[in-house]
Image (tube, rainbow, N blue to C red; front, side, top):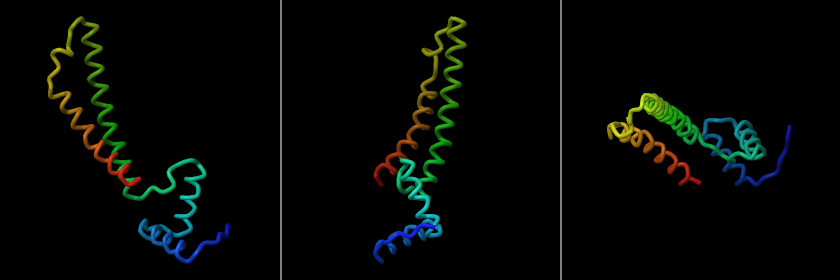
Length: 113
């Protein structure tokens, strides 16, 4: 068990954060303290976690698309074809469309500091 001193105002701020996250005060304080001790971001809200999870899914899709393109380019190169010149612009537009939401989400997180 750990006892710490803080003002009533400080405790109120921490309680509000914990309640906003739907977490017990002790769980919230413990997770923040461990995050800081491990060199991680001191506070990651539920919304931030949801954004990170969505970004992970989007990045997985982008990586899959890039892998498929690379495989086609490598196969074509082995066969002596210049598939890059024949690749439709829609492929690159689709990749750009995959990346754009990631940039929007990252900007949201960065703006929060």
